[in-house]
Amino acid sequence: MKSHLTQAFLDRFRTLKNKENIIDTELPGFLCEVSSSGRKTFYVMFVDDYGNQRQKKVGDAAVFSVKQAREQARNLLRQVQIDGPASVLGKESLRACPTFAE
Image 1 (cartoon, rainbow, N blue to C red):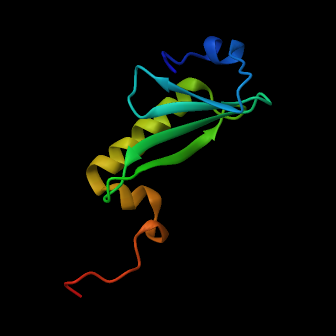
Image 2: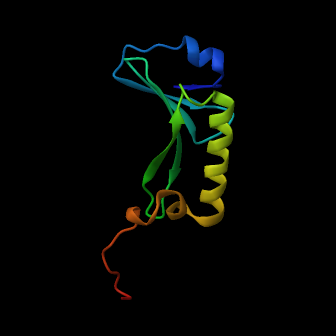
């Protein structure tokens, strides 16, 4: 589901599904995952070097406001653009298999 994420919208939002992702229309790649228990978690979504879609947790909605989480997501997306996805994911996400060049 796509929507402009605001604090008021997120406070009112409930789901009967196991998990539902609300993708922000203001900042592409920023989303909030809402579980049926009411837990809300912010994530940033991007594509890694191998073309796989990845998500990095920004934080819990009980700790971060939507505005704070959006700013943190903006910084993470900026880091992905400048330094590449590996800088956000860490070295453990890189494939360990050797290439033909090695």
